[in-house]
Length: 109
Image (cartoon, rainbow, N blue to C red):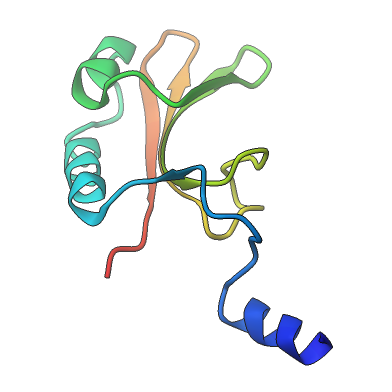
């Protein structure tokens, strides 16, 4: 059993359930292409006009917030560095609702 668990972890399989969000490759590609057009200083409105409404909008104490667009995620898990299999576009927006940065984390085969 331990060997099977080690093999599963080595292959990156860390979830017992299928993802709650799992976009197909063409949809992921479109989202990534749109995200690549965003740049620092763009407005919140530009983000939502380009990408649509985010899956989540998380405020981190008033200095900034993240707009996350999930491409692959599991229910009950945060989409961040702790969830190594998560795929997303994350847009960091400052107090003035202007883009500070855009992160894209995706695997397309």
